[in-house]
Image 1 (cartoon, chains in turn orange, red):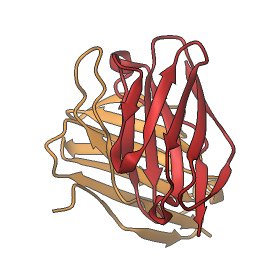
Image 2 (cartoon, rainbow over the protein chains, first blue to last red):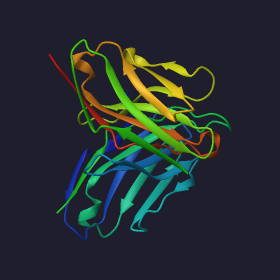
Image 3 (cartoon, each protein chain N blue to C red):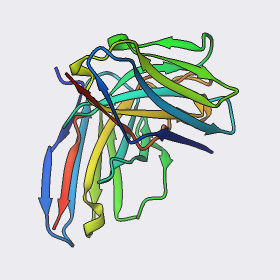
Image 4 (cartoon, rainbow over the protein chains, first blue to last red):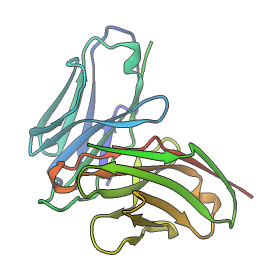
Length: 116
Length: 115
């Protein structure tokens, strides 16, 4: 009955490879997010989708491409992996809510990506 | 634009002592403020949040935080630390309904609790 799940939990790969991380939520939320936590534990938003539509797109290399096949899933595909992509990637979900509201974001357990 | 500064990357307290984790924010609009906790190898869990209304907010596990607009602060406190409180704590700010839920996080504070 996991609320927000991510696969894989660990991912070790070589520079230049292409990899994907998957995220699924069973909370009935309409909005999903990808965050990157670097080696210094600094956590920064990358993307957000609401009902399969991209609503937040931070300054992220275009090697990163999110895809949301439906509002319960948000996958992250990374092309031509670089050493600096090594980090923990967290998926989160929430109900977007109306103006003047902010609903809790529920986070997945994270995917630790190591690029060698 | 929003930003968050957490004063002290590491805080160490004795079990039973007061916990105080400091957070200052910058926001061009009335902020929504949050504290999240991250246990080792786990995702983040919401401790408490301030949106509007009462400036002293209570969260889970006995934590509370006070929004002080004049000081642009949202410090997290707990009267008596427990060993299970050892974790990393993140303060975050959002611009509310205009931000599509975008959270801007501080750099985190690791709390160590010793017997």
